[in-house]
Amino acid sequence: MKLRNWAWAISLCLAFGGADLAHAQQQPREKVLRYAFESAETGLDPAQLSDLYSRILTANMFDALYGYDYLARPAKIVPVLAAAMPEISPDFRTYTVRMRKGILFAPDPVFQGKPREVTAYDIVYTFKRIMDPRTKSQLVSGLEEEAIVGLDALRAKAEATGKFDYDTEIEGLRALDRYTVQFKLKEPRPRFLETIADPGILGTVAREVVDAYGDAIMEHPVGTGPFMISEWKRSSKLTFVRNPNYREEYWDAEPPADDPRSQEIYRQMKGKRMPLVDKVVISIIEEPQPRWLSFLNNEQDFNEKLKQNFITQAAPNNKLAPNLAKRGIQMEQVPLPDTTVLFFNMEDPVVGGYTPEKVALRRAFGLAMNNEQEVRLPRRGQAVVAQGFAVPGTRYYDPEFRSELGTFDLARAKALLDMFGYVDKDGDGWRDLPDGSPLVLTLDTLGQADYRELDEVLKKNIDALGVRLRLRIGQWPEEHKAARAGKLQMWQYGSSASSPDSGSALQMAYSKQAGQQNLSRFKNKQFDELYEKQSLMPDGPERGAVIRDATRILAAYMPIKVRVHRIGTDLWQPWLIGYKRHPFAREFWRYVDIDTSKLPK
Image 1 (cartoon, rainbow, N blue to C red):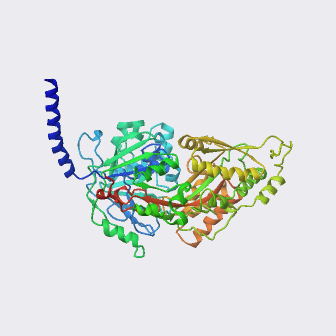
Image 2 (spheres, helix red, strand yellow):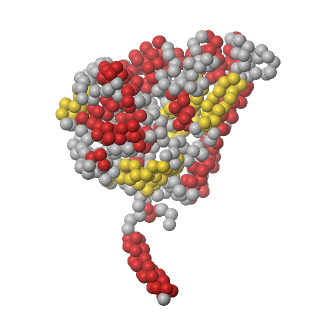
Image 3 (cartoon, rainbow, N blue to C red):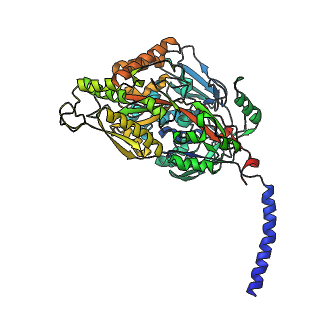
């Protein structure tokens, strides 16, 4: 009897299962964009972020007043939450923005099932919250530079009383009505529009959401962007789904007339409702080889900035490998608007300081670094030697500019150390400090294969100088925190531009950014004056000259050694449609599509 019942159950399942299968075959396949990050996220609250990868995530969940046209080159700012471009006073001190109506935040229990429209009051709150000491935002010094009238006084009052007064209206940041926000600045800020065009860090938030989640807000992102988080395994995997409240928005862009690929993307995508994919899955795969194999095995749709370890395999002589081309894989190589740098902690007793012998040690270290060798060997030609802080694609980048920041001269480096008493005093073959004590430098770094290759070249360079260099392996998030706290002697990282402005890169040496963008904690009055001067100037040759003068000061003191500007090699599967790297914007998820007919069966 049991066997007969079991057989009947099987036949019933087969009958109904077949119907289910037929029904499933009629349903469209879910469109999922899958790709991997090489470093883990730190959180999902725009105001508290400084790392690139977290900012990519928030840029696709939140909106700022403005953003960038997806295809326009040179980069073009366009309205997002704003209804039009701002009204700007002739002196660049007043910016009035009229906002679009009917844009809703993503659903969240805080809203109790009711639609929540974004308004000018949310913009005011978002900017004020950055200045609230409780937020612990790394954006404070940058926002202070924008000199919004009354905002610094509001922060000072909060520091004195222990409570930030969100309800007090200030002259420089006002909601004129429900859909109009006005910024008034103490000084001319010709590039303020670029500041308010970054959703990764200036994504608009709702006050009641922040109040409800409190210190856990990093784990509860609620924005107006096209995606919202649905699953989060920290430092492992993040899954995002469409925001069901996302506005009716259709694909549009301004492709350059002389760029056939952008023109083709425009023809394919124009008029489609965004976002086009249903889900985005981000995996954290720190090691280059597993990340590359994951792409080759069709587990990822997109391989962003292929590591140099595999460039000869994927793109010999900068041409897509025939075996990949045969699979329909596509590739694009572009100069990235970034710089890799190594900083010296200016408060460290060995490498820090401003006396001649300390400056000589840093300059000698910089001169001994053979960046051309780095480009040729571990980077396999996928970079160019950096000469300054202006990066490719920004206004004042000059490929012909030369400075000591990009110079390799081992003989000169040795002579500098000899001159200031960094010689071998005990006969062990290594240089000592001028007082005779051992000279041992420590560079904190990562253990991944690509870092090991880079560090091997660097260590050989410094060995040739006769200086002992100790490499201390750690994890990026912990090292980043330690660097901000001034606890590392030396550290290396990449800095990527978020706007077309070259001058903003100098923040990494501005004294008021110490512990934030300025990880070296460099302080120099003349440099600060030049930095502040250029930040107020309109674009033109005069401003470019001031930026170069500031760069020369950094070359003289060497708190930061610039290394290379990288070339980005992106590869994507034949079913990923519409991808085009933007030099500054990071919110590309909404613009791409998955052709499910081309997916592997």
